[in-house]
Length: 358
Image (cartoon, rainbow, N blue to C red):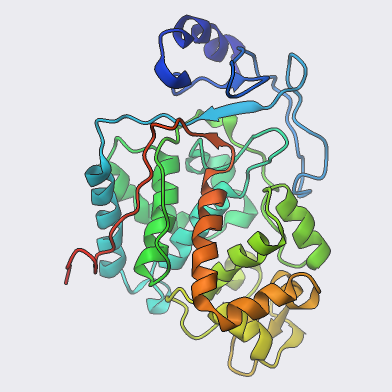
């Protein structure tokens, strides 16, 4: 990448911008994010080669190895009502296009898109994550772990054409928030401010989880996302939605009966179904129940691990506790690595039912 393209204009603009907000195509190097920002230049070093999920090395940066900074930028000419209109457009399209995936609908794949675009974040160098909207580029779209998400992207394309002022990172994350709320899940507060970054800022493939592993892997993987044990168990409760597809993930089947309703069913099924570990048609091992449900090895790890299991048991008994915690953890996932000025508002959107839509 051209280092001059991102570094030279910065020093001329910083003094004039209020609240440490910078040009949308500027990446910054910082020794402290609050007190002062020092211009720096990204190297072209690539990092995290292969499917190591962050276990190899760090990105190499000039000037001492400080991480980059993602600063949220909010254009206040677009108020809450404008973002509510985006929410409504997504929600109405969810209602209209309800035949997708044998009438499961697009909600679950929108949640998966929000999670996968956020799940590339690395806390050590602040690369990846939802900020740059880089899923729109072939490199990230083509990550084998993202197979099937092109359907969510295609679903959102007319929304972007209708509201071209919204960034892709904001659109992808708002799509996930909309789906959770419209599928009877908790309200999820959301903040705008993500910025479309250029293609050469796309993170390398291999940062998303490998579902064939156990508890040690799960815990290590989520450390990179700055998630503790409770947050891990909470976030994985989203597997109440949707199903796996053999052609996409190498696994097949739904996690439960109500695959387009957000609930605590995932935890209930983990504890109560009769699970058999067997090989599927793709030669991958998964847990199957007589009712036709499935669990991934990473799912089953939650009841095999002595620290995870009590949290599963808690959520199986108390959906309200799960909802309250999920809302917070999902916000954390979507906002990881982004610095928000105190003036940037947080929006909690009304569902279509709240607004009286038929």
